[in-house]
Amino acid sequence: MPSPDPLSIRARIGGRTVSRGEVLDWEAERLRRVCGKLNLSAPAGTVSDRRRRLLEHKLAIGRDGLERRLDRELRWSARSAAATRLLSAGRRRICTIELSGRSGSAERMPAFYRSAIDAGDDAVLLEACPDHYVLSRDRGGADVVLETTGGSPLAARIYLHEGDVGPVLTAADPDYPVQWVAIGRAVADGPALGAIRHQFRDEADGFRAILTGEFPAALPPRMIRAHEWHLACEFSNWIEACNSG
Image (cartoon, rainbow, N blue to C red; front, side, top):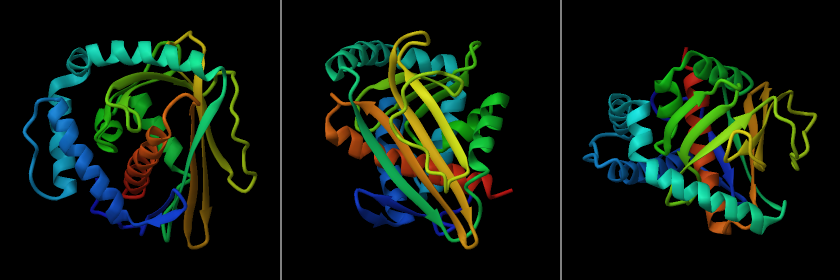
């Protein structure tokens, strides 16, 4: 990952403008917590240094090893997801943030992500956020994401399929030419649990992105607020990465 803030990225979270430094501070705290979850010694140095060291640990453990370490959490989160879906009765909470930058492109970011997941490039996929454990493509074409979402104490397995058919409550903004839309499920062939609609636009003096996740309404609002920071972290890092070449 490149050095912090080469694009002057700012986030709009909860009605206020958040600096790149504040998002990096959030990432640093999540780095500490994830190292604890994986029984690793917390690395020292800058956020970039610690990010790289955690990535090296995850790559050394490997996909299968990470799944084994998270097996109990994944089983509990699957049960919780089923109960939350029933309690929500189809209603959703919307989690939305906005990112903007004074240079670079955001429109190329979804293609950058797809290229990485097609190639199985774990480094690009995992380094964007401490809470990422496994991001891969299954035989049915779905992106399988093992991560800690928002403020949840448990890692979860989420299936996101861009070719899926299901309800997305967030309308497309015609001013954003690049749309990334997918239905989220807790089981590959299970009922829809939520959705994403991420929208990207390049401008004369930079870029703008509106990032939206739709979650079951029974989730506590604090988890939605926490996921706003998760979105800011991963997409800021991915946008920086795809502009660094």
